[in-house]
Length: 306
Ligand SMILES: [Fe+2]
Ligand SMILES: [Fe+2]
Image 1 (cartoon, rainbow, N blue to C red):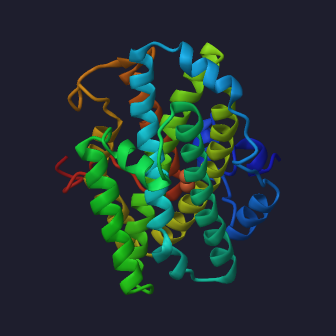
Image 2 (spheres, rainbow, N blue to C red; image 1 turned 180 degrees about the vertical axis):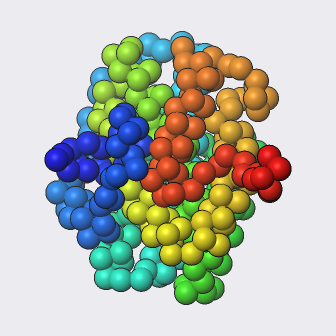
């Protein structure tokens, strides 16, 4: 029988296309995910942006505007998930989990470096790393700020204050690994990678972006493993995962909605339609939740009367 790694990208069950296999998969452990990280080192500072600069100069102002809107969310998002991660590292329950979580924090810092390099060398933002972040922040929508500056920061603070608080840890991983990484980041990565590959542009950016996606699938695989363990051990924690997702999914839909459109309104940006973007995000989340053992489908209060 094929191993999970042969069936998936980095052990992320959302990448299994045959959904009949979802109920039987045995997830990778933090130790296996740590060892996978050791086999996949990469560097941001050796990426060559020469062709990217030529491609960027040839883009229309409208395309540049759309691409910068997308990328600013990633640039700030990587900064947020790198700096708001300490709480989870300190909440480890075993040595393998601690080892894996420290690799994830390094990964997120590396991802932010890739975006900083691209904004410096291709988009042409002058000044310091911090000044580039401040300028990129001007592109963010209100939903983004709620999720990354309020919900994520609060979840991290709760864990820092009490690393043994299992409800706080479940809330954090549901927010970070299921919503921010699994639902938003991987959806945006799939969309932008298809757009740039289709046009044959920005090869240096794509080189780093593909490595980032590889890392993100590994991170989400950890989150799926963790939430499956907790949901199986305690039905109250399973219900908590669902409640958090129900609160955050409308905010996540707002994060994905481009400038100039309302949440729920149909749009097309860079040749990609809103139903493709939201459909990808929802399918990936649904597959992971099936493996965790929870469902977003409403449950009848009284199954007999229903
Ligand atoms: Fe990342
Ligand atoms: Fe990540």
